[in-house]
Image (cartoon, rainbow, N blue to C red; front, side, top):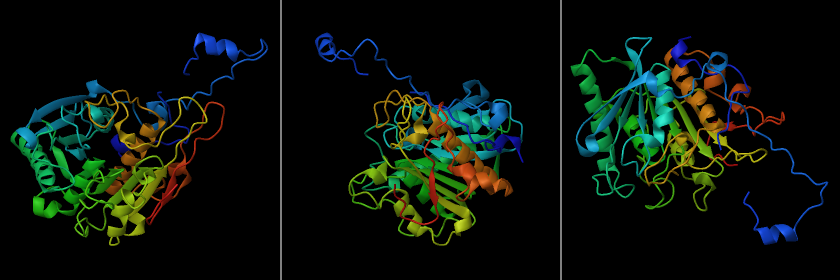
Length: 365
């Protein structure tokens, strides 16, 4: 199997990166006997070593960054600084709403993906609150801007052969939140848009905000344009979109019923759970893939450290691409296997809550 896409090969592969004090008077009122002691904290799973699991931490020095395009048709291009394969696989990563200033929200995911030997194109599609992309009420300008950004970056590469060149036949798409809705529509319309055929499609809690109604109305009504042999993975959390009142049939539960033409062997719904057994706790909130991002005043918190769920998502993302390109290591890439469900163990040996994986919607905690 190609080393640049190797999924992790062991179960305990994760790390977490995350008391309120009583006032002095209150502390006196609730003072405990001298024999009492604070229970020892239970640290989270440790970060895996690259050599042991094949998953490397983000490394900014491993990539070069180029930007181009005008306004909402802008793009960022990330290339491996020392590519091991030429041409390189292509990953197109589309951010959620309110990522105005650049790519900070998805920086860690991008750095990881490039470290695996991929070129990453990051269409901006939205550069300010006064933008051509109005959001879920009218998604077409958003799709058009994202497609223009992807095309612009590909044209730049074609015009500059000294850059790492993409292997268009190995193209995968990743979309988070509103970017997941845009990504799904782009994958559905790739032929009309003149974009690379999707080999793998990974969606992290795709959501149009719910402002135009339940069930993701910004999605294309019919998704039969996504090729039937595409590997499709859709990830949700119990504290994400489907955990909100009235949104049980949103996010992945709105996408999957429209994918009946894709065989079960090519697709999965994946759900993570909150786990507060240790400290810091693991959260399945909306935005799991944005760990390591700094945010820019949008919906993602300024402090959002990389944690075990980021590493797990990277494993799933890497494995989906590898399986789509090579057909190998299916136990990491598809289906309800122990390797895929496993989230590692807390430092006291208690397993982190496993993922839930199923083939059909709806998925629920």
